[in-house]
Figure 1 (tube, rainbow, N blue to C red):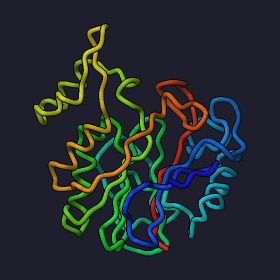
Figure 2: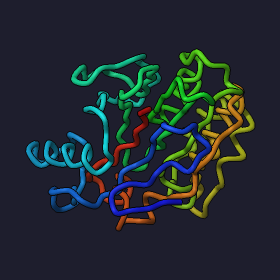
Figure 3: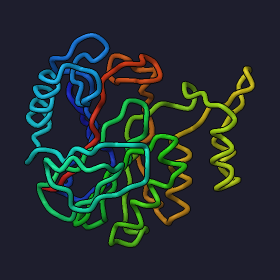
Length: 245
């Protein structure tokens, strides 16, 4: 897989002309726990974030300003967003070329979608709350293509070994699907290690999406490349994006 100092291209069999990936934390101007390419308007200096977003557009050769969302860990999906709208949602779909759909993460799971012909693209922000609330299912339902004709890529997220949750989180998943228990391992503290990648694959499979790639990174365990809220508390955000040239 091609790698440079600014972003990780999605390693998936997407059609020619579909560009997708996740930024790394290199190449920006933010400092401290936001250093350096923080793309989130979290508690960082606003001017630094503005400069970082400008650099993001240049580093990733984006054709337009990304369609930034106000994410709330829900299951709302917007279709054909436009730059500057700042819509409240956790997923976006486009059927237009040169429109950049994007979500921000720092441990949560970004999931990028493309139809097999490249005509329809989407991205979803899927932390454990979003997964429980069905953000992936909502995204697939809102796309016009049949699920077997969709490709999905799981971008960098916190791994199971680093993601400890309480029993109440596990119970929320089990209430939806008893098989979700396979994605939780009890630890020595009587709590649970949750597998976001496994939970996402299971939910995608349930709605008919079987062509799923990615899922090999850990944001928590790779501090030199990724922001991690669980590791650092106040921190920056990566961007996972998709567009068609």
